[in-house]
Amino acid sequence: MYLLERINAMVKEQGKAVGESIVNVDTLLNHRIDYTFSAYAGAVLARIVRDKHVDVILTAEASGISVAVFTAMTVNNEQWPHPASVVFAKKSRPITLPEGGYYVVDSFSRTKNKPVQLFMGKHVVQPGDKVFIVDDFLAKGTTLAALGDLVEMAGGEIVAFGVVLEKTFEHGRDELKRFAAPVYSLVKVTSLEGGEIHLAPPSLS
Image 1 (tube, one colour):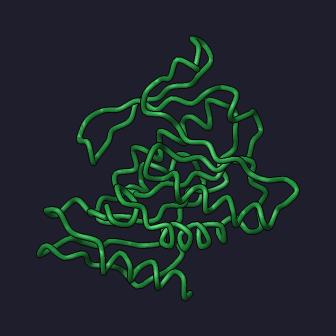
Image 2 (cartoon, rainbow, N blue to C red):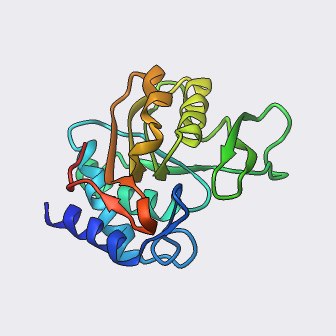
């Protein structure tokens, strides 16, 4: 439990409430990346899939990438010589993805407060791949649900969802029920009342 408690303490120490709906962790994940924090988070997220084979760890650009990489490092130490790849869905279509060579879904960015699209090349997730979806936040669940849709378009199987911070008061898990995959979070923000971040006791659930 030590790492999980340390992760929660770091959010409490460095996070800031913006109004009553936004958690600012831009000195940990979203702007200046604290790789110690990412390493802690990746190590704990890897525990979720310890007894499962994982082919792909999928996230969305950009804030989930550092956590996904550190998750993969721990996962791959345990399932070598069959390492999992890290894939991140792109928020704009690069010229390297030709017409007909990608999947695309609509989503919504809470931090940018506007609709976005997520693109994933058809060659990066194969039919039958076991996919662990990770991200920095679970709020309304729109980004994670979009990632889940991409996996299903590709014919993959979602092993689990894992996030660093969950705003439990926004009930994002409801959006993910249709995937019938377990959802885990490391830090559970119960409210931002009074301009403070209120956390539930640390638990991997």
